[in-house]
Structure formats: structure tokens, C-alpha cells
Image (cartoon, rainbow, N blue to C red; front, top):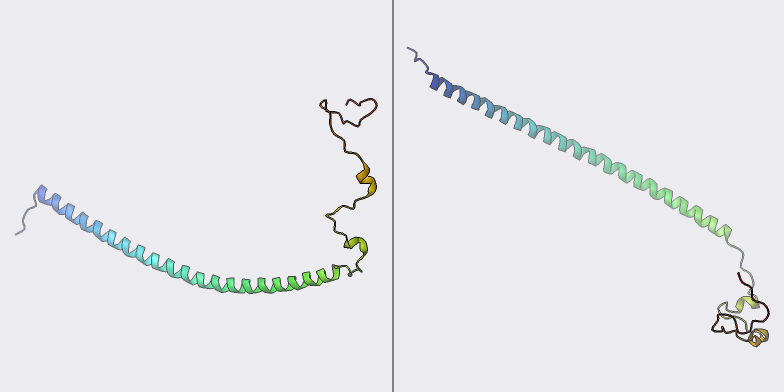
Length: 128
């Protein structure tokens, strides 16, 4: 003899069944997400290992190229250097000290007047 369901018990049964389905779906999606994440991380780790090997090879090639270019630059620099010349007496004079000549020391210093004209100025002034 089967019991008849009342509308209230039928409603509660539907709520419980739907809740079970929801929980089952959430658990299944969680498992899928976990599996996908593990798969993606393992692929990324494998790719990184391959990239590290490629980076090491690239670095070795770049170092070899740098060494080759350095030797070429050294060779060019040696061929571009001028031959050493004998030291001349003019080269021995330091460039920071100007040579004093009697004519240069005999020139009087010009000072400016309050009007802004040099004191030693003669003749018509040029206005510009």
C-alpha cells in the first residue's frame, strides 16, 4: 500500500532532490577544475624547462658572438692607431699655461667709464 504524497511533502522532496543534483554538479565541476588546473600547470612547467634549455643555447650563442665582435673591434682599433711620433718641444709645453709675450703684457687694460664706454676709446662711437 503506497502512501499518497501531499503537496507539502512533494514540494520538500523536490527541494531535496534538486539540492542533491546541485551538490553533485558542484562536486563534478570542482573535480574538472582541479584536473584542468593540474594539467595546465604541468604543461607550463614542461614548457618552462624547454624554454630554459633554449635560453641557455641562446646565451651561449650570444657570448660567442660577443667574443668574436670584441676581437674584431680590437683588431680594428690596433690598425687605426697612428704610429707614435717623436716628442716635439712644442708638445712638451703645457697647454694650460699661455705663453707670455712682451707685447701682450705691454697692452694696457681697458676699463669702462660710468657711461659704459671703454676708457681708451677714441674717435666716433658706433651705434648699433
